[in-house]
Image (cartoon, rainbow, N blue to C red; front, side, top):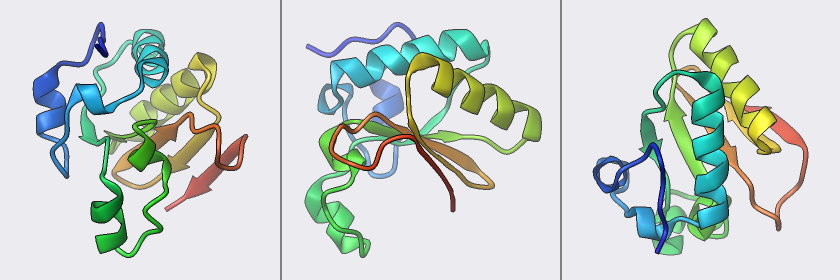
Length: 120
């Protein structure tokens, strides 16, 4: 059973697409809890687990970190919060981070390129 100190089942139900905390890997959630604690601000999840079929339906490979339960997108729209979130994610051990105007992607996939940061 996957557990989290800061993130509740309802937050995953509100993601797009809707998913469950149980779809996520415990190691990923442990890092996310640590990052949330380091940042000292709430993390609002906008996306977490995505099925391979959903991923392919959006023109993606169907093999991304979200399909492994190892990725989240965190709502973010201020420069200060963006810094706090990215800093905390790196300190917590995430080494795959994507930065967009309205969200931060974080994942700890072991099968994708490591130590990367990209812009959307």
